Image (cartoon, helix red, strand yellow):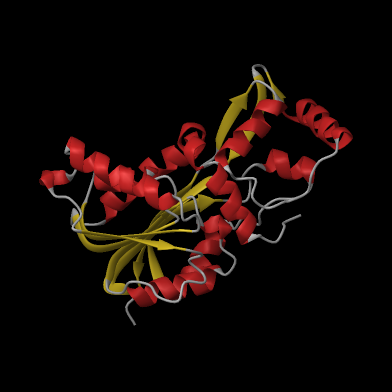
Length: 270
């Protein structure tokens, strides 16, 4: 059963785990690289004048983009205000180590704190809107697609990764709650009035953990448990552990399934 998203709780959980996120969010890191490569395959230029990243977090996706593109004005949004420092440190590292293509650094960096669905003002005339592993937290996706189209240039691109219907199904099957994940077809349909799909794909990735307890630790360290404030009793916790071990054991421990999807779209010309 899907559960309504508490954006304040999401913000709190990710803020608490911002420093540990990069070390534990291995799938999201791989998604960042895959999404950046998808963008590079489908855009001719290696330079963007104005770019908006939605859900910039700890800066992993920013790093992947800056290894492949130059950006004149980089706008980064995140629900977690503390993300600003992580992104600034990422930019400092690029400048210090000379990673930027042709030695070009970002001339204008602006951080937009808050819920992307509630922000009153967004930059306009964007070349690219990109988001890695964030759209699953949004509640009104068609409105999001419509608004991003309004702020993109006529030939602008929207590229995102998110998670699909089988994501963390082990947790959902035992706990009975979880995010409402859209299928790739559903996302393409929601965006179809505003964008034409250039490339899209999905995959499943199964991680192996030594125990159900290790799975829960992994989830806590990445902050992705931000949908429930319920405190488990000892008996509830023990029952969850036992059921997880019984239903999802494998030769080296237990499984946790991720179901990433990727999509690159071009703004539809009316």
